[in-house]
Length: 183
Image 1 (cartoon, rainbow, N blue to C red):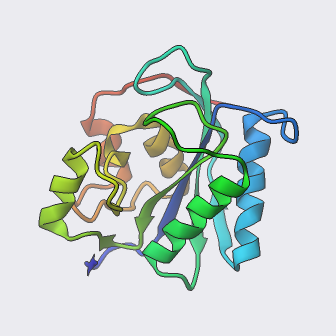
Image 2: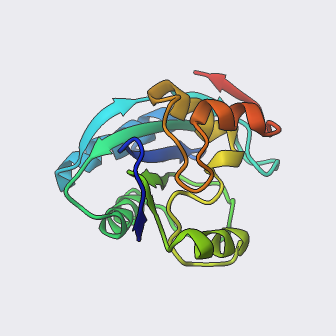
């Protein structure tokens, strides 16, 4: 992992568009996932507003509820990613297809200003949709209103360590895809 100077912030994207017998709403599922982080000694610092969002890419699946949180942890980025996947599994997520409907989706959006695997390979991994390699910052966060808008609730000044653009500038720079409205 390569580290650059910038605003230190660990950001996690939360999403859900399916419910369960235990949780009657996607927002309740996201709150349960946030609560589960404390079991791993992960401290939630900020929680964005919750947003109802259209699926991207567009499909006939239910709309999502999305949010972003900032956290503090002693785990490194890859350990944290493993914990996020464990929480997803514990909540009933089974990964079958990319962009499918899901009970819970926890994405490590950024880990301070670290770049994984490294700046040159980050672009290659990002372009390979089928890749199973971890990528930090998240390879598509700069293209998704359902990520950028909640990120702006937490910090409009956070800068993408690869593109060196703030959340505010990334929101201005891309063509919006999908409807995002506050819950």
